Amino acid sequence: MHSHQRCLSALPRNVVQNTSDKKCSIVAEKDKPAKDDKTMVVIGTKNYQTMEEAEAKMKTEKDCLAQ
Image (cartoon, rainbow, N blue to C red; front, side, top):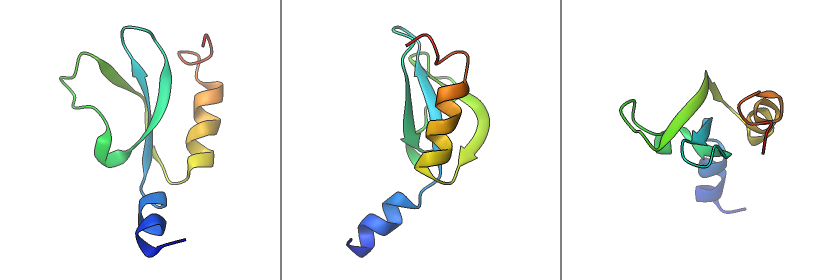
């Protein structure tokens, strides 16, 4: 793994939901939608430190379960 890949994988993550199709996904903290964004919303209030933590949240979040 290259050093820049390690840095990217260490970025905090957020679970977000597309407001039109209601699908959830995981994005890096730096890519999370702005508070006034009407197309994507952050699910929950926590930044997840690993992809596994974010995936676990997405699997238990009621807004994401209908996918």
